[in-house]
Amino acid sequence: MNLLHLKYACEVGRCGSITQAARNLYLSQPYLSGCLQSLEQSFQVVLFNRSSRGVVPTEQGKEFLTM
Image (cartoon, rainbow, N blue to C red):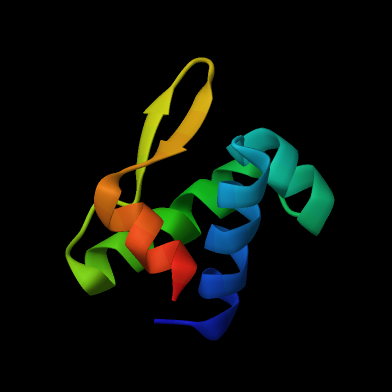
């Protein structure tokens, strides 16, 4: 786990969009998606439900983001 990944997850949660969060963080969208997947694998939990309309935190994701 990388501490920057935690920052990235918080920005995705704030924006509700991986694409917008990537723009805000000056990262590429594929890189940010990979970081989120790595973070999810580290904690063995799904943090966001992804769709073509954006992302929504799961119940576990909401708990994670409020920590």
